[in-house]
Amino acid sequence: MGTRIGFVGLGNMGGPMASNLVAAGHQVTGFDLSDDALKALEAVGGARAGSIPEVAKDADVIVTMLPAGRHVREIYLGDDGILANVKQGTLLIDSSTIDVETARLVSAAAVEKGMLMVDAPVSGGVGGAAAGTLTFMVGGADEAFAKADPFLQVMGKTIVHAGGAGTGQAAKICNNMLLGISMIGVCEAFALAHKLGLEDQKLYDISSKSSGQCWSLTSYCPVPDILPTSPANNDYKPGFAAAMMLKDLKLSQEAAQASNASTPLGAQAAALYSLFCQQGKGDEDFSAIIRFLEGV
Image 1 (tube, helix red, strand yellow):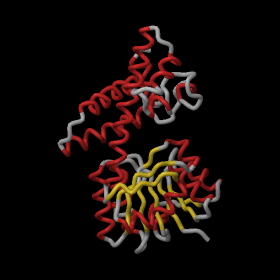
Image 2: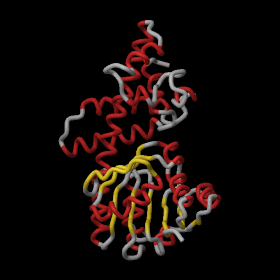
Image 3: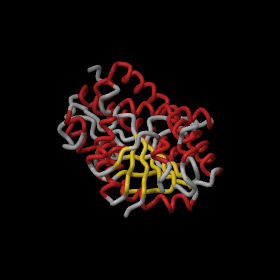
């Protein structure tokens, strides 16, 4: 039989990740506030739990995928939380995208109780979660990473040990700040091209082979009829929602402020995505900001 895995947070990302663990032969017991999410896990062969203590008590591994740092602190550190109910020797994997400070706080508490823990946020979106092709950016001790790696390999394709506790979150925050900045740059280039009478395809053909080439252009082009897999071809349905990009950009700016780092473009990107989301566009793909820039 496979490893007994507890999984907390079975949303758009956590649900498919848990399904892949079930498909690999592991015994997955999940907890979520959504009954539909629990039913989906049961439908693929997982089991449901009615509480955090029920998830934690018999698990050999616990994976969490939660919305924000406050949820991670509550789920791990609360009186009815994971650390209060887990058995000695359980491996803890938090794949939430949260602030570095919380990641290090929770990891320190876990280590103090004799647990191995990694922060392992992901990149790759819902499609990557379903396909098992996520990139995991992992922070934690060498021993913790070595123990977590086989489970991460089931859910992802690229697993990178970034360093000690919190460095997985640091890598995710830096990466997504860069992504937000580059997407705005690509969108501005197309917006200007439209004003100048340059066709989208012509700009793509030139820039994708020139010094302007980047992932936001060649893998996630923000205008339709260039890349079949781009959300632009599906009325900008995410994908990666603008609200999630704003969350990550806010985390980057909190981290920049705390560490006295200069990130003026990151700050501008956060401001633009904040305005975009204030217009009720948070549920659209983050590449839809091109319509905001063009006044659509």
